[in-house]
Image (cartoon, rainbow, N blue to C red; front, side, top):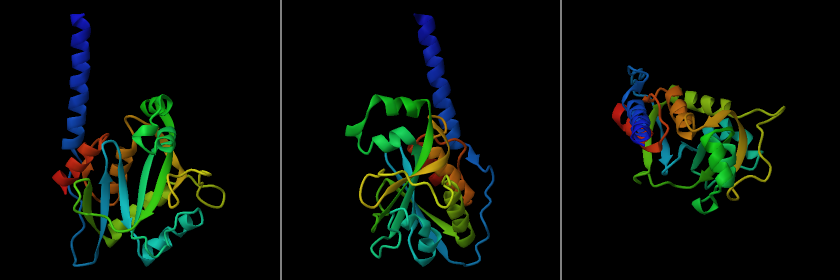
Length: 223
């Protein structure tokens, strides 16, 4: 029994050490921030809950045009009252079947802890409380903001003539799910995708970010 307990303790210490190292070791190691030439910056938001992060993109004429293909799939990015587009990546079974904790079921949890195909969830909303503790605001230059948009667009799985919307999949009237690139598992999950998207735009994050808490900690630490 003591041998089993020691092994369990060793595994737990390894996991804790890996999570801590993932948050404290930056990627990239050295800051690659572009020189500030006084150009306009764009504010994006990282939205967190206990297990998941999303990226919020401000909606204006340029971003509405860049993501106009979503309008054809039922996401009203051109709606006058829409101020933010919220995008997240995750495991298909858990994401589609768990809109609230009350909908939690064993099979989606099992798929999330093993391997699942991935989806993107896209929603639009009005004003957001940028001072909320679950919101992290970041300022991007024009080039950095464009790289973020490119990364997001390239995360969609492409149908022959458009992105592949999942029929009748959404939590409400303004959001939709789409087939996405990549496989989901507990080690490479929704928060690691958020970190990859941010790094594509030049934002430094921790090396490995399986949890929202470690990702937001690293964002504040390195930026």
